[in-house]
Image 1 (cartoon, helix red, strand yellow):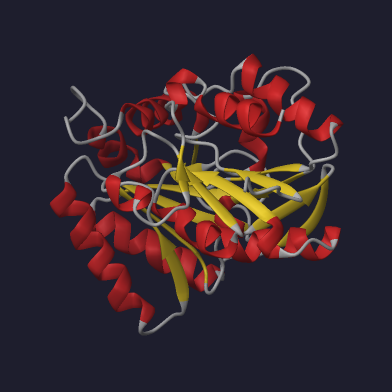
Image 2 (cartoon, one colour):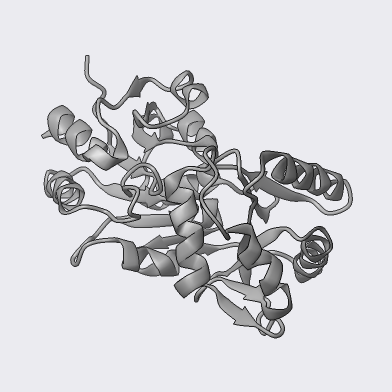
Length: 283
């Protein structure tokens, strides 16, 4: 018997975003058709709320957005939930990243991501040269775009309202060493970390992830979590998969993700996999 969801939650990178970091017209159309047929559709992404509009076709509409890995929740453009990193943690982590020369992006709850000007030299150096074989094209192109157009370089922090850190390294041993340092810091200051590839780690408020953000949305719409379908492709989707009644991994997802879901799409994110899955299954 085919699972009939009361709501659908979609990851972005590697799921509805292709490797050019764009949502296609086909994906927009299938979302529109599902919503017309009475199935609400939501986005659940590690990206910040403010950057989503640049990645989607004109007229792209969903019923709500869980952004920054659950830190911020919007319904119909209105803010429902907002978590903020403590500033002592923000300042301390920047000092650590500077000492270790770790690539970082700091995301405000509103507005573009930032990095400090004095750290620009080692941040830019991390994505210089050719792409390492083990780094996904989506992540590498996102870092290139961030350096060229998306990061605002600040002389100092001029806000106290930040949703998450994103850290990256072209070398797995470097990012793993950084993860170990963050784990040591957790013994002093409580926070949550999440990864979406072998080359990154993100830092959020303690006990916050996609699942907690989704639950806020479900409470708002009075939907049981066992009645939702979730589609994603990476480790930061695992809490979402565990929370959903039915979980689907993209064909392009790593094997360890495919092992824990109920189903796998027939096509990848570059082949409009979400469009084909949702259209054939529910329309």
